[in-house]
Image (cartoon, rainbow, N blue to C red; front, side):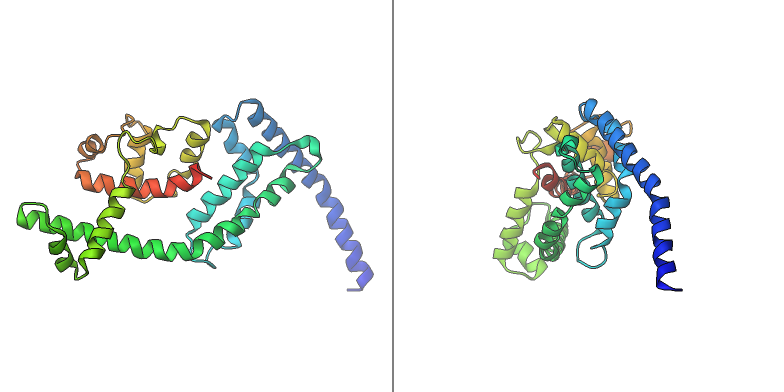
Length: 257
């Protein structure tokens, strides 16, 4: 095909796409205005995010499968950055909404850099804590008493120092039912919004079941006490605590961002 013909075809496609692109941008702006005027009502956020989904997916796909970070984690961070951009967007400054959001989504680069190595460490740490919990539970049942650090170390074939460190990390992770740092006690709109956006795809099935009680979702009565959630699910307190700690670790970075 002659170069001139190819160039003319490109101009024709651009002209044809122009009105469609303009309509899409106008719709996004209208959705943003509705959400802004509703004082950031989450019900009006959903259609706005859906309109921006192709843009958000593009940024997720840039890294998904290429870095040791799960796709849900990337999606959560892109969603967090998008919501933050929508809150700070000022149309009177001349930038199109999608253009402004694209600029703010560059923050995903920093998130990937900070977390791609940490994710490997976290996975190894989670495996060790899982081994510690299984060993502790088995010994507690066989001995009919809480095992000592030395007994757990012998069972796991690790040092007592390692057992003490894992025990301390678990205590640090567990959310106290009345803790001021408990994200499920935070009634700020941002917290409610991000928590809802993370459910259910960011959590395992067990975590989802605990999460539903913590937020009172799907007909569950809201409950923040580990013991009561355990009884409602027919689980042990330790199983609920483990799921709750995992949820907290996933949630906190987005509430503090």
